[in-house]
Length: 358
Image 1 (cartoon, helix red, strand yellow):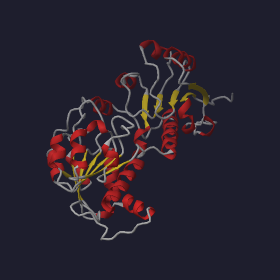
Image 2 (cartoon, rainbow, N blue to C red; image 1 turned 60 degrees about the vertical axis):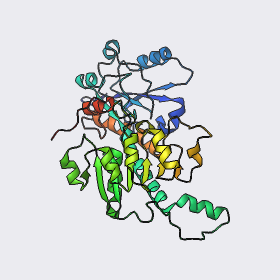
Image 3 (cartoon, helix red, strand yellow; image 1 turned 90 degrees about the vertical axis):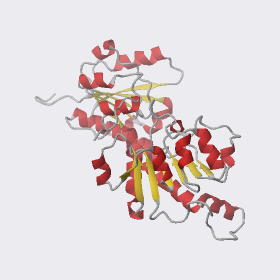
Image 4 (cartoon, rainbow, N blue to C red; image 1 turned 180 degrees about the horizontal axis):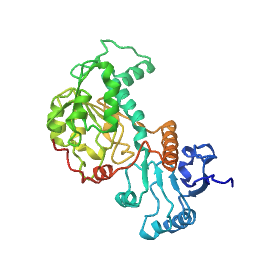
């Protein structure tokens, strides 16, 4: 080795058999820039076998990079930490699922940066939410089916009794102002809507900068919305937070859009109002998934159901992996990652974060 020249960092790449198409070791930003050890897990492997492979690979690792949505890493116990004295970063797309395999505060205390690139999916999901908004407003899927059946409209193509037509100038309620609804709000700027949100964890200064009003409760937000967009992530504190009371507060004819998780919605109340023709809904996520084949909402003219595809594109998954690699390299080079995990993030998703207090 040339004098003064540093050795390449050592990176362990963990992939799962089903996710390798998004995490090709030969075509990643890691190629040629690190000493790469590839560990691949198969569905037939037990926990002990995975742990043994992992431990054999990480003893001199500077970084661990994980393929998207692989959340089955062995738990970082005191013994496992002792095996990784050089570790500086763990990067992947974990959807904030850490509790069962790593203590976030402990990792940060040890100087190990955690990277979660699930928020790199935000543009894709927000664009889908916008598309579904327009689909509801113009009833585009029904129009396509009409033409495919060889028919033609016999009346004006509107939806009497429902919010329809233009998006411009609409009153839009953002349930939660996390990364998805922030990007959704940015996409809406050319339409000059009236935007209001309810999110107790966001300070007034951020909302004022984005020209977004604050509602005092989810119920009040729903009552003032023509279009109600749920961007609240599922946590122990948010289960069924879009309650019967919130759903009942939606004005008759309002539009309801869900692209996060059904766990945050009281389903019975949602389906009662939507299938009863009181509101129209675009729903991309269900509980359970897939929903029962005979579920009545599958066939309701007031529900646009899609099979959890808002962020499920190969391009999006590859971006998750590529960004995880790039963030790991940034940390190894002494820089800052784009998607670091913070204690605040961990508290939010564990449901223990205290609301913002002015």
